[in-house]
Image (cartoon, rainbow, N blue to C red):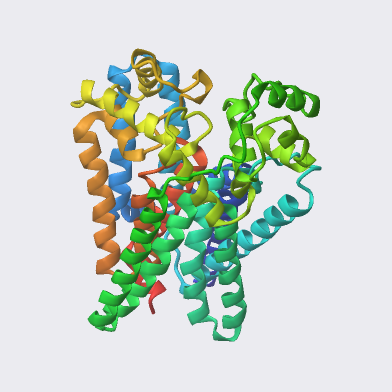
Length: 485
């Protein structure tokens, strides 16, 4: 009996180490992520408790759902012409099976281990976010960081922004369990909020808003203070309405004097190695970028206006910043750029919002022609490329990307019935979190459901791994019960 207990304790530590690798890997390193999956699979084979593992998986209906989700991708190869892309997609999405298999077949036995994982998650986010901020603000020129998106040094800035948002409710959970550290957790939470604001990642900021308002409403409804809930909802609606109104206001520049494009071109070519008649680094017409930038600084659109620009201004224009306000840090600068895009739609290249609209329109056209079963697992890229050509998209060839909307991507791949099944999984999981009073699980799936509108989160290995880890972690009743004890 003593030997069995000792073996169980050793196995618990091994399992914790594997989950730690997965969690750190999701935040910062594909190497740690791959190592965690490899060791997790090896551990299952060495323990050889196949009967117990199978029993754990069998009673977890969400593992069954995710298994069926992956099987749909396998079936999608039957009506796929491009098998190479199809098999590559299966490889990317292998984490959807591997990570839940590791987590769900060997349940975490104690609350203390879950809290340690949460502490590790927050610590990894804290260290990597401080590193990101330090490198970007102090060593930008050394590392040649030309865009705020380069702030994220550990992969996608969008995925990282969403992870930061998830870290906030985790901090709240830890604060209630470790009251001696509550002020430290509060400081870390404020840092995460600042980082989200500074990074200008709209998906991350939206995720933060979901987390903040979701947490407030959760606590208010649990306390049955419905009047306060109405107030919170009103504040949220006012915030959204004010933002929309701000974005609807056109940006107008005052003409300081008649433009002289001959002298403008001559002076620009003296000060920059990028020709006046070419494109800036965001693939926009440099002449238009320069003209807008001069207007934003109330300088004449002439050679003497270019002469008055600083070296920093020249570099900003080369990078594609068309307004001095867009070079500032923080959310306001990002909203200012979005506001210009909304009112100037002639050239979508280099403008993330306008490009996404082009992606969505193209994806919708593919869906209309393949709405029953979709184009198959491997043909979504080819289908999008062909539709860009047919519709004579204004996007440059290198800017013609996938749909950047998980629902559109899934629908054009597997048709309407595939999309319905995917949505059924999401909302069933949401209902499960509400039923079992798991705040973090509830906020995670809310963030996933909403950010899927703006991102192809399940088309990259890191995005798939992030979703798979938290989906599996909160897929069991015992897990949510432990978290709320």
